[in-house]
Amino acid sequence: MPKPSGFSYEPRADGTVTLTHRTRAATTLRGDRADKFLTEVESGDAQLVMARWTGAYKFGNERMARNHPRNR
Image 1: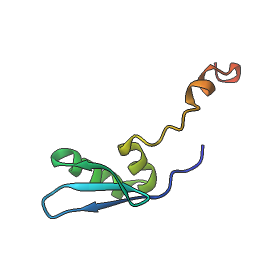
Image 2: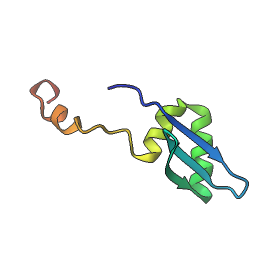
Image 3: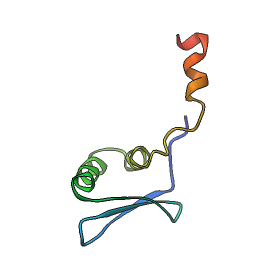
Image 4: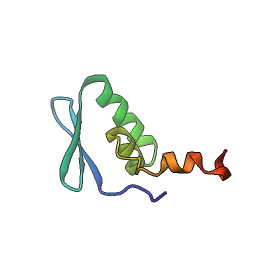
């Protein structure tokens, strides 16, 4: 599976975090979720973390791969 790219985030003064994908707003995190996201993005691969938090990490072929005889 290709590594996700094109994600960025912007922490704001009011405590919210805005995640964007290729300059379009993907999601806004507030409160505890924003804090958890910031600690996780600092400790791991930032692009993968942002893809996971936005839900854009699945590309549609997971069901077919799961049903393949090699993966049973």
